[in-house]
Every structure is written in structure tokens, then in C-alpha cells.
Image 1 (cartoon, rainbow, N blue to C red):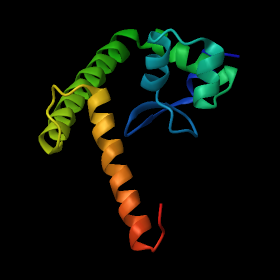
Image 2: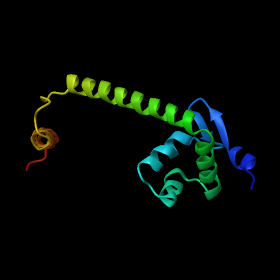
Image 3: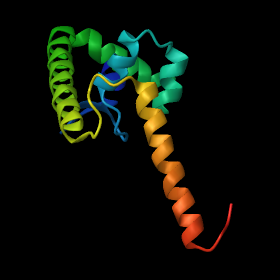
Image 4: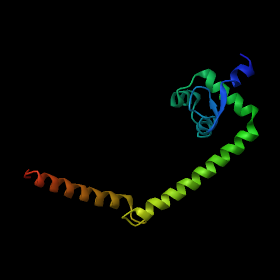
Length: 127
């Protein structure tokens, strides 16, 4: 199969270069590759064929500099968003940031148990 045919499986979308007929971007596949996922796992994760994966790999090879630059930008923006929303979470959390996870879980389980008990008592059930 010629390179032209394989790379025609990659189309431009609002999200960047993507596998034609899917919502899977080159960057999503690239992320999995950088995470060390095997080809077989990548095909399973994204429900893509050998031919589609080869098209992505060829596209990355042919556009390496541009793809790496855009990927780095996506990773940077993602980290900024994650940091922003983590701050939002902690601003809204009833727990102090330094409280250990186990302690938070314990408190939440206690609250849940009290609510369940109140619900059962309100429904006329007796323990």
C-alpha cells in the first residue's frame, strides 16, 4: 500500500489530525505510544485496525516536528487545566487539603451511615 493511501486515513478535524471516520486523534495515539503501550493495546483502546495504526505512525514520522510541538502544547494546556480544576476542587471541598485520604474516606463513610440510618428510621424501619 502506498504512503499516500495510508496517510489519507488521517484527516484534519477541529481536534487536530485524526483517524478518518473516528474521533481518535493522532495525539491520543501518540500519548499511548509515549506511555509505552503496545501496538495491540493501542488498537484495542482506540478500536482501530493495523492499517489505521500504521497510518498514524506514518503521519507522525512525516510530520514529526509539527506533531511533537502540538503534542507538547496539548500536554502543557492539560496540566494547566488539571491544576486549575484541582484548585477549584480544594476551594469547594469541606476537607482541608492536608487531610489524609483515609481520614476523608472515614468521615464520608460516617456521614453516609448516618444518612442511611436516618432514611431507614424515617421510613419506619428499625435496626
